[in-house]
Image (cartoon, rainbow, N blue to C red; front, side):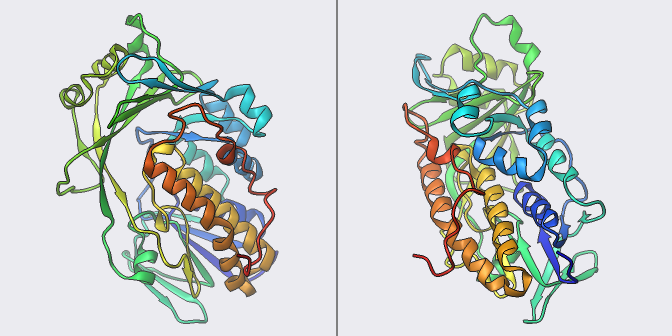
Amino acid sequence: MSSNKKIAVIGAGLGGAAAAALLQKAGFHVDIYEQSPSFSRLGAGIHMGPNVLKIFREIGIEKPLELMSSHPDFWFSRDAQTGEFLSRIPLGDFARKEYGASYVTVHRGDLQALQLTALQPGTLHFNKCLQKIDDNGTDVQLTFADGSEVRADIVIGADGINSKLREHLLGPEAPTYSGWVAHRSMIRAEKLAKYNLTFDDCVKWWAQDSHLMVYYTTSKRDEYYYVSGVPHPAWDFQGSFVDSSRDEMYATFGHYHPTVQALIECSEHVTKWPLLNRKPLPIWSEGRLVLLGDACHPMKPHMAQGAAMAIEDGAMLARCLGETGLDDYTTAFRMYENNRKDRASKVQAVSNANTFLRTQEDPAWVYGYDLFAHDLKSERSA
């Protein structure tokens, strides 16, 4: 698809990178603008289910992702005090057979670095903090904090919960604090060897009002990561996280199973992150601007599908633009929202409710979804 028309993607996170890679593969001229000066291997893990692996297959990074990741055979849910199983959700070979792709857990920084290799050289621009947007009807002028300006025919806002594009469309409004925090820590797996305990490949420990999700992040199984969900009184969060401690973890999770106590003992650095929300947005696009991922439907991470929904958004938006071309982007934007809103809203609701896989249930509606085999609704479908 040769054209002088240009697409700008704001934000090179997992959703923005997926959208850009697929649009470039389809022949569109795409540049990505990321406000960070560079990316580093931040200490966080992430789940990628078969619904996403099928998108990475299309991008061309499925196999290298499988090689670097951990492949749990089950998602285990356990009672926080007794350790008894609440559910055993089969993954591994079952997922490959039933859902058409692997289920993996991986270090988020490793995944992001891999995604960036799929972008065309010279199209990712760091240190580009968006300051001003001017959609004049003919094109969009973007002005960045460094004084540079670019023009694009459409702009995709993949810039997270504090999206500058969302603010431009709907006005300034801070996200709301959900009343929950997440503690995060990456553990060197070698430290677990001294314990005569079972450390599952992928397990969620459930108490009545809190949980702890734990899993390996590499194929070498040398990193073991946990992330919590805990109600917490509001405070004035400065920045995206604050430091926590083993003492705070003991105070919060002291009633949990001895396996969890061992994890806390092995924690070298613990951080605490406020979980933020927004009300559902009345629009996902306007004029030449369109939103995806946390910019339009942020959710608590309790279902391990937030990044997956951003990646699915990016893939669906690329598919719709491929159907219409940039000359009819308005139709593409309406098709995109019509084909994504119901699914993203359902995942958002289930994730925020924190019920997913606590008991034995069938997750095929999530993992079995194949975005490229999904029949597109027209822009006028109900």
